[in-house]
Image (cartoon, rainbow, N blue to C red; front, side, top):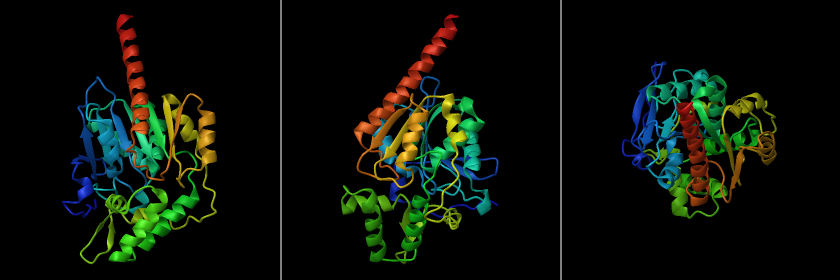
Length: 312
């Protein structure tokens, strides 16, 4: 049976992101936020957040990109305001990709540009492998075919530490952890970021905005593990234009992996986001402008092809 999520109704990070439920084949509800108008004129940009993350990580991107272009933000099962999966074993990038395809079909989207951050990028690769005609373009952010085990262990340990504390100790720990990823942010800005992954209960404990079983699934991974590369999935992205982004301080995607991705796809647009780690804040004009240029170039290329077909 589906497991509905329990989240405060007035949680501030979600205030500007009202959602519509989409019923999946598994009878779970995913949650979708759409800005702009879905139409045949513009290819929508579909935003997929990280492993245990939710759509609030794209808040800065939505605000900077503007509402003239259609953006689709998705909370997949187990994250944000979506239902939890019935069993822990049901969580996988393949299941998530299947759900993304269902959501696009429900929204009447036959082709889209996918922006995947972290695990969201792995979902994008799995989607391209199964449904290449859905992919008009892909943007991978701190995502690739080789996952860094060090980042997984750090994430797991940090979350276990945070969720064992309460009161001011929680706030201080969050600041120390987030400060390593965002060294230029003030205490107030770091505190605001906490709400993207947790809320505080009446006892002062940090409660996750994700199914805790997602983190339990990482228990067997060790710091020095070498996880199996998935280069065939990366190669599936050859079906469409590609943009590769990496934050300077990330521990999710090693620099050597990023360089190899660029080498294998010399046609890809590559960009490093300076001064921050994962998840990217995606709130600076430079990277948003680069994404906008990439999106427009794909849309214009599509319009030219359509015009040629009409003339033939």
